[in-house]
Image (cartoon, rainbow, N blue to C red; front, side, top):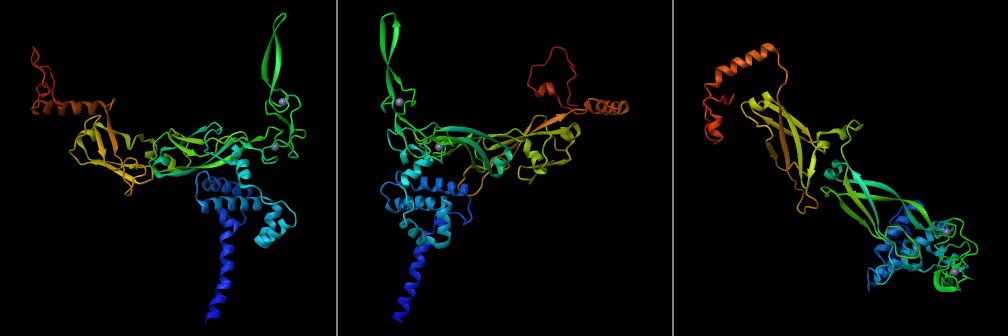
Length: 412
Ligand SMILES: [Zn+2]
Ligand SMILES: [Zn+2]
């Protein structure tokens, strides 16, 4: 029995150890992940587990190192192949065979984010934030949506790993001797000279020169690159909301990348387009104010006055809001009906969804053309009933009686 248990333990233990270290699992990617997906995974995880963000947490720090290891192994086609075939053991042997040993995880980090591999430390230079605006339709604010955006930004050149040099070598600048500054004499007037300190023009103030410039970036150490970001529009998110992508701004070896800030604004409804049926619901033309929505409904004179009508509004997610009046229910022009809970979802509402209100403003259109006989009929009906109605608008309005009686105000 004891023997059996020991045997079981022996079998299980190495398996557990291997599983925990699987590079693909560690990075949360599939075995056939592309280079892009691999980079993206590294970017996300290395920021999350960076020791600067988790000071003193040994297990998190260990994870940061493992993530760098996993990325380095999988980013090289050769080592990735070895890993896929022979696993960790294969990589170990490959390394012992004198091949590229694992680099410093902070160096790797700085190849992605600049700033010498650290961020958040005081006194460290930080690059500018990058701001972009994304316009999304109101429907997406109502239903929630994910948008992929492609942005061109400055990235550290991966060919030379941000050194600018083809062979990785840099030399001390011969002109400024590495100071980056030179003293120059300028003649202010005949016989009067002034000494000025200026940035070295040969090395551009860096103090170093490169003999063999990197072919990819031409020695500038960075390239323009298109990167895609996923913008998550949450239900009920306010217009103009700013979503922060930490350290995803322009990169440079000289500073820690600033943040990318995506501002989400509301796109005007596009008339005439709308290939999708969904694009042209009534809701598309709602106006939004905070958590409330506004809509203008047009009624004919008959409807406003005599009632007996129904309207079906198609809301932003396709559900129907019914507006109606029974016969005899009057609607005054420009009056507003508040339909409870048919407004915007309230952003990040904790106990389940809750909604603002929908304000429906009624506009009444009077007919401007009438058949002659029709006009006659109406006139006679009016004439017949106006004296009997017994309503005095003048009195109802609370204004003093006019000097001359019979001004002709009546309800009909
Ligand atoms: Zn380069
Ligand atoms: Zn120089």
